[in-house]
Image 1 (cartoon, rainbow, N blue to C red):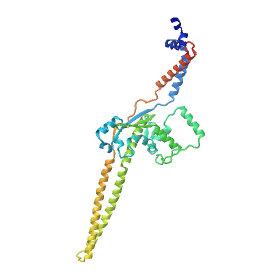
Image 2 (cartoon, rainbow, N blue to C red):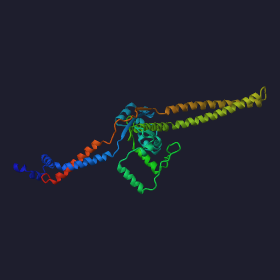
Image 3 (cartoon, one colour):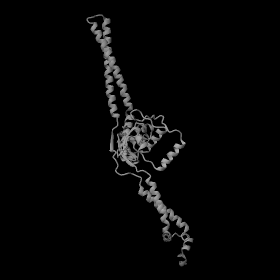
Length: 361
């Protein structure tokens, strides 16, 4: 009985898997691996060499927290922090809280101004706008070029990006043509934003084929996001300030007219004892006093509005600035080739085992 169990055919019938039998069979067919491995190495190397290298730049920002979070209890805030929830953001009076910043960056209104962001390549061969760089300074694999050529053959007349006299792109975010829409998608694909739910720290990542372009564009995206947040949080305070300044100017004009009317009446009606003149003088004096009181109030309101605008203006702390990367982030060519070789070994081994009757289950 024991002698029969040692027979490979008996073990196969009993559904026993012997690794030594499998490895022995594979080793006997080692020449079978040579051609597939050689072909896989050549094809995978040729394929990955067609993919251009890219560089990543990260920028980290810590925006000023809103007022609502400071009013929450410490114990409640601690429990929420343990659960990964920032109660400060949830209780904020702002409609756009940090959790919405990734959606803001993907919006057309945010992407369109980035068409004119200034960038420059590390070798100095290109210096211009981001849209021009993505149009002329970016390398693409041959299959993407073939796909684009096929689309041009079957698509109608292609739209173009129009420029003004000063070289800036003219884009209407409300109505983009095909070329502008593709450019916005290309810029959106190169930007990513992540917000830590516990700390509200914003991490911006930019991927470009040139290290200096990646660093310069990351800085432009950071500045654009800061301007967007600042504009949003201060818009109401700015409108109030403009309103009070208009009222102050109107009060100033009213006070000037009242002062001139009162001065002119007093100068031309001296030493008069008629009650009608005295009543008119008192009326003009009261109007002058009312105009002065209104002017003083409007000046105070302007000062308060300026203070509110300063208070609403957020302050940003840059935790990590944009720096020019020294090494590319990808593609990982060696890892890709090794992965393809391992896949080739697995597939070839499977074919060998299927064809070998001694190890076939």
